[in-house]
Image (cartoon, rainbow over all chains, first blue to last red):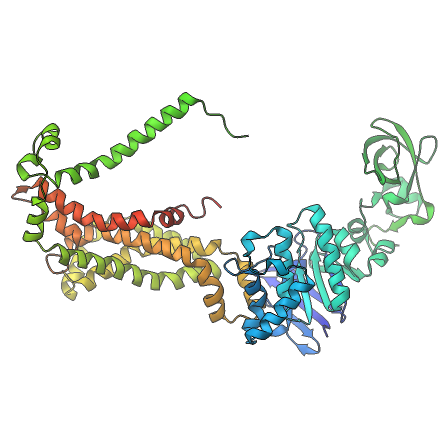
Length: 332
Length: 276
């Protein structure tokens, strides 16, 4: 279970419309990631699904039941917050058992479920500690544990990893993905980090100013972005865009080339430029080149390339990897 | 890197801090010393005061002349009563202002605080007349009411600040976890707010205990708390330093002891929000 349908959902705060009429279908067992820049309405959309915000118009259906006016607790969803939102005065055990206690479950059953969740998340030793005695990663694990015990129809994650450091973030990312594969429960995940979106999602929903710009599988969005916004948001480093004569030559208002589709040469190529910055990552080198024809272009070269600031280089975009956009920014 | 402080700077600030501390504490110390002196010695030169004989006479006379425990009990009733009623009104008020603020919540809070800036003497006459007409003069009920009203803005403000510090996401998590409003308040909010409520309560008890303007003007005998008890020793017949000091020590001792034992809580209450 865990089929969620949004139809013509609108959210207004006073005079301001944050979400214009929006339709979205989330299938059972799907891992859906809402991604977009700050203020694009992705968290608001999640909170509407959770029931923490009231919809201004439209309807939300969960497993065929109209949940638009249901309070959060009655929707059968569990949420993991960015700030973890653990109860600081309760031990980990009590935190995880809280939703079960609220559901009126017997203490024996509560303990059984808490143990099971703790086992899944490998935190049996932490059960008697308080949130204040845990690290960020451990806290987030407790928050996930509290969500798991309820056996919800769907999990909602609101930027759960943004408070963690980079190494921990990667570990937790894997854990959440594994958890999804094991539980096969619908998950809706909000992030502004497109790497998280690409690596975790079955379906990515790219939002901009409350509108869905495009929804699809990560590779679909990567390979066939519908417009400049999606093209610039998906992929890291972001796509290079070139207008003017170069674009006109390709019969477009703007063309886009991903950094990984730009070849670098020290002898020849259509775009001549000088190296501004070369970022050496070991596995890759990001070379930022100031060209006369195409402006600043980033090239992602596999492995180590020996170039430095001020070197003259030539860039060649892969001809079959050039994205063309019209004057409205829509893909041609 | 910590800021460098030279040893001479450290010595100077230490001396300055101790000097200010002693200056503030000195009147209380002097009252304490005077309370153990005979009336004749108490008006002597400081050197004479220190060297003269020590005696409990002043305490005996004070208790004999005016009933300390009656005043003490009045102070307890007034400070506890006004605090509890104040909390009963302020908790829901601060609760709604912190968690369901309206457009004018901030203005309302500022307006409440502004009433504290008004000199009390400005409303003395109308309040006195209202009390006279309602038959509330020299009654505990009347004083509890006025002390509640006088300190209510501070209680609301303090609790509001506390409640604001409770992250909204925790309450939302409780709602997601299936908590009803009652369970949310009982199991999540109240346990988290208890330190704040306790500090507010302590501070308000102290404020009410020490309140002298209204308690002196609206009481005569039966509802008079310890502030009136002290004041009665600075009578037109002349000052009785030893007895006045003994009365003062007796009046401030209970609150001083309470403050001493709860100082950690009090400091936390007063600096809440300033440091995380």
